[in-house]
Length: 104
Image 1 (cartoon, rainbow, N blue to C red):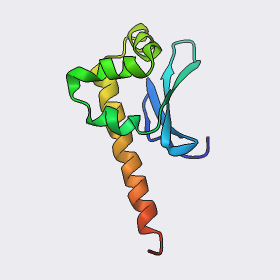
Image 2: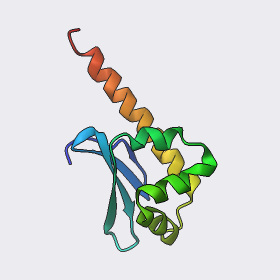
Image 3: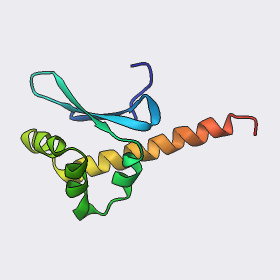
Image 4: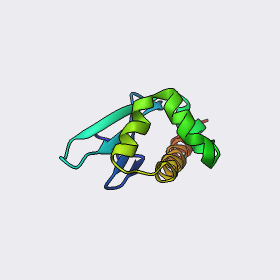
């Protein structure tokens, strides 16, 4: 991966995938392997704007395995919500930076 992740900490990493509208969520396991989940086009923004109590349901609707993996790794939904929000902010910052560099 050439591009710096949108969000990264010891438990989670969120990166662009293919286009800037699709993303990958990596959940670090204790054995050093990473499990990844695709965040479909437009969902990063939707997750970031989701009220606190509704994120678990939305994540489950997109991929039930995400919630199961987070629970297995003892990662709280509020924790991933913060990561998703920060990844979305960074994604928007990069997009604005890209636009500012264009001749309009």
